Length: 330
Image 1: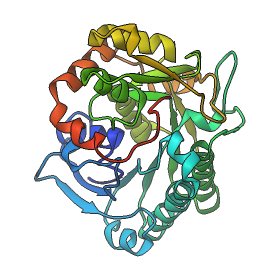
Image 2 (image 1 turned 90 degrees about the vertical axis):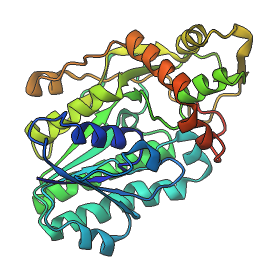
Image 3 (image 1 turned 180 degrees about the horizontal axis):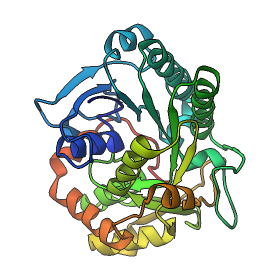
């Protein structure tokens, strides 16, 4: 079995790769993995093993069709994580998001089609649905993205559907809620707040903190991806939610508590343009069809994540020196 992983040096992609190399996914215990990553600011080679007999690392751009055409032949599975993913950055530089997320996805799927890759998994986000005041989105809910980031991911989802419908490419799409866990870039809410608090730096909270997000540990997300990859139906979309809905204010206060920091460390900042108020996924399809159930409770997972950042400043401190989005909030 040969697996091609785009964005495999990023947060979720690297967790998927590390777990597969450790034999954590049935049917892939001996898989050979090609990691394809551009190593932008969001990717870190330090999130992957320095070397492994079953892993080959290739630095490359997902928009580079000739490179993909050279590399993909012989692979049995492609898992597509590569994406620009930070909303704040998309507001400031939307063209790069359209290029990577839409054109990059099209280039990858075209290369898969020409190379005869039999199975593709496209990893997307709940943000393509927009904002929901009550209830939860199903896979049949209309797409109503509100940021350049989510609009570019919605475009990528439609490209994936088109390659399935037009060409018969066996591609499935997953849409997950907010992830958290070790090795997440410190531009995102939880690692930004935790790393700031560990360094004695105030944390920025958008508006009144009433925005609601649903959270899922990265390990649970990747287990769900394995289920969709091996048992999901081509042409289908699968929502992957954790069921843990929290306001940003609640999360901020819990992180203060876990880091032993006072409330005075919070700085309220002006809300960002088009800030979605609430996300919530109906995950009954992936649970009923594929038997997915999250294993890591949010309180347990959050405490473990804070402990990991406390114990691993050598991983995240160099990343904080790179340019990041203005707030690192969700």
